[in-house]
Length: 393
Image (cartoon, rainbow, N blue to C red; front, side, top):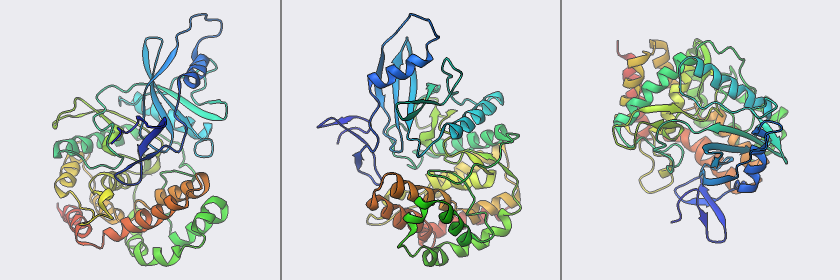
């Protein structure tokens, strides 16, 4: 198999797909000419010194185009977004959050400013950000997103790091971001009427309306998600809102080394960061990384790693113990915490990429399939573990 992020025969770039197999990239890969033109904007006006830019590695993450680039004796991380997915204003909020986290002592790469002071740069129809390479080892670089932790030590370290992140994030006062394509909001899972809230979003977003059209989404949500949403509602209503990461999994972290006992060094990718709550973010982190979701449609189905779950929560509690309300909310939110992002991803595949097959997979396997998992033995065992821990003194 061709390595993720590498060129395949025919000069195609292969990236992570929606399953175990690699897929052809949706977005054109970054090349030397493109990044050279971009990085020229970061050279001070009148500076005659020019160093060529060379792409050295392309990211296998599928939702944007990104690469490591050598330029002027440094290695930079360059990322191109489609303006239908991210706007300069949205990136500005992420960059402001990163600065807040850095001031609190967290290692988060800071977007570089061009000679006009912009950290989100529009060029030839693309939207770019340029960042220094994060310190540490990208130990999960080739692992698909939401791959489970390789060891319980990694899970414990990631839990402790998320607790540190939440402490650092406290005090960031920006309001919640509006629901959008590929967003990490909690607008549906915290709504008093979740089905009505989805209807409101669809009425305001033609792309989401088109993605839902022809699908029995009201029936499916009523059957597979609404009971859990209603059970979580009284707990969620009492949680303290705060900014959170929104996409905490091992490939969004760097590590001290590639060993089984590595610890977390730095935090990557604030693209799904939003004002939710610490408990919501813990539930997201567990949903992302303790279930083998890529096996959901395979013989035997997905499994939950209970030992990694316990290790993650132990690591978190060692830094920032969850209050009893938060522990109960994590257990209640876990079966439905994916809902907002699943809807935003459904809109992405349907309206932005015009990919009916992947929109169908997102709806059937992700939006509905993940919720259905929690009524099966593996999902019930995971929820039982969380409930036992929430009842503990």
